[in-house]
Amino acid sequence: MTEAIRELPLSRPWLDEREEELVLEVLRSGRLSLGPWIDRFEEQIADRVGAPYAAALSSGTAGLHLLCKIAALGSGDEVITSPLSFVSSANCFILEGATPVFADVDPITLNLDPAAVEAAITDRTRAIVAVDMFGLPCELDELRTIADRHGLTLIEDACESLGAEYRGRPLGAHGPSAVFAFYPNKQMATGEGGVVATHSEEEWQLLRSLRNQGRSYDGGGGWFNHVRLGMNYRWTDVQAAIGIAQLEKLDRILELREAASQRYGELLEDLNGVEAPSGADADHKRSWFVYVVKLDAGLDRAAVMDALRREGIATAEYVPCIHLQSYMRERYGFAPGLCPVAEDTSSRTLALPFFTQIDASDQHRVVEVLGAAVANAA
Ligand SMILES: Cc1ncc(COP(=O)(O)O)c(C=O)c1O
Image 1 (tube, helix red, strand yellow):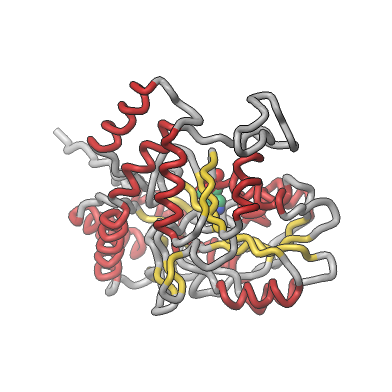
Image 2 (cartoon, protein in one colour; image 1 turned 30 degrees about the vertical axis):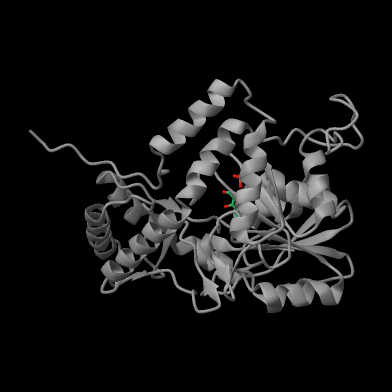
């Protein structure tokens, strides 16, 4: 009899009795939405990231979109963002009619290169959506200086980076409104969900109104009193309860992910053809979101992924460039060559199984199979 293959997923949230207990409390309260749990969660996460206000929403994309609405981005405006990100970083302002401009990334940090951002500015540029990619803080101070000099809005897409620190302070504490997200592959998972950390009371009130169909944010005037055009981007109390349980163990989550990343780093040290992620330093403390390695040029990535798949090990190409997605090419005529560093990176990167409770023995197995696959793919 052949031995069954042990399946290893790319990611998996850490949920236990505490989430069950709090969700049950919500269910028994009879109030599934617009109850007290969201307020409680918002206070706790604001405190955690060092921002005076936080507004929870149905997703990270919803948070980014509302920030673009509040900045009044629209037709004729250009917005600069990273090509090496999830599509939301650009969709959030395209939805408002603005035009995407992609500036290339730094080959080590994989975040926006401030010099490329500066070079991409025209007299139509209105905003920068800066991404903290793979949990690593972007060059926030330099980007803010550029934004201030040109009178641009700076929006921070920190959806992958809850818990990361820039120059000794958490993302969210620095001033630009920052959005975090809670899809199940994230450090903190609630199913769906996102939050905007903001330093402006006025913006916070607007976010609360806009997420709830433009109702007056203080609840005055009754349920059918709509004072502006809004969306249904409401979160639920069930998700907020999961979020509160996740926040309680966030330190442990970050610690375990850090340990798992170190283990991968050590295991990969002597493996030819595979480069471990880097870019963190005293000013940029990464919060480990995914573990993305870069294969040497010329290696057949598809063959490597195939070999891992045959052993039950999930991997993913992480991430395709936004500007080369079919809808982007069709709509804007983007083509390869626009952002060479991002394109080269995205053609060679690979996410390995990585989650809070990953077993050391599974990580050994991943690297062993990866090593053999890379040797064969040369
Ligand atoms: C960089 C980045 N931005 C935005 C988002 C959007 O978050 P959500 O899926 O919650 O809408 C994600 C989520 O995967 C992301 O990785």
